[in-house]
Image 1 (spheres, rainbow, N blue to C red):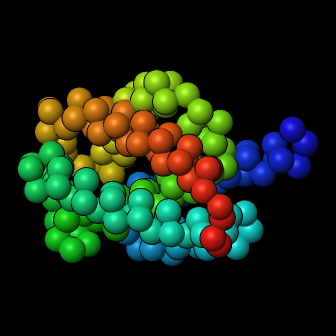
Image 2 (cartoon, rainbow, N blue to C red; image 1 turned 180 degrees about the vertical axis):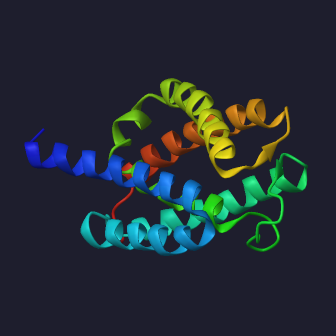
Length: 172
């Protein structure tokens, strides 16, 4: 792998981490500006043809999953403004930002579905736990184990999706 490719993968991962911190620490207004800017930068500078569709689908999936967990009492956002009555924008923005990793810095992971599931089961709940602490969000005791299962399943699903998509001709 060339040095330029490694740099691109590192920038992709660091862009996500910066976005995560800005969204969690800055709240919804910062998430709208910084997250929107980071997504635009990603699609302009390193996005693949048609990748925007995957990112948009993943954003909707995030609204459904985390929104559903909120409706079940998993999150208490206090008096934060919620998108569609479900999630604060800063939390929702993390979903499309994560999606920017799938075909780039995490592309290697999807060849190993069991490892992807393990990584999702561990890193998903840790991300929610850290984000909740930093953003002042209360979480139900059952939420982190459920998030482990959700992210394990999501990562296996991404592995399958990526492997199926790799066998289809590109349509831009």
